Image 1: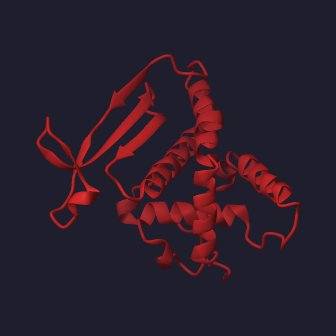
Image 2 (image 1 turned 90 degrees about the horizontal axis):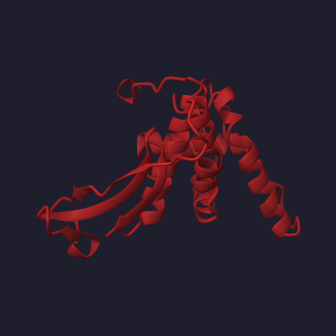
Length: 196
């Protein structure tokens, strides 16, 4: 991994890194304990791995095209998949960030109401029929997402139908929510990504 000349727009500033860092560090320590501390110590910084995941999420590239400024794509994807499997994103969203955002907005820590939606996403003609479903009421062949948010628009629940790689899309939605919540907590505006 080369030393970068300047940060990417998706990189976490110090104030925002302080929010997920304790949970990610505890996760890494727990994994090492489960493995009886056997093997090499981790060689990649968690912050740089989180920056790489955010970069991938913002740019929409495939993992193999991840910039060489980051850890190898296999390492970054391995962390992303493990965080998704072990519920780290849910822990960040549900256990920490949503509560902090709600309290900062003068609300109760736990929501008392939620909004449910199930939009259908039309797929292109090139998507195989096995990879899509049908919403007969709307006469749309495609994919369906079920989402629940609180009254501040913060993610409560997410499910997707008719999709082959749900872990990736759900993980990317959750990492985008972590990014949004940490920006709200640090009062950092969301940049216009079309200009970057």
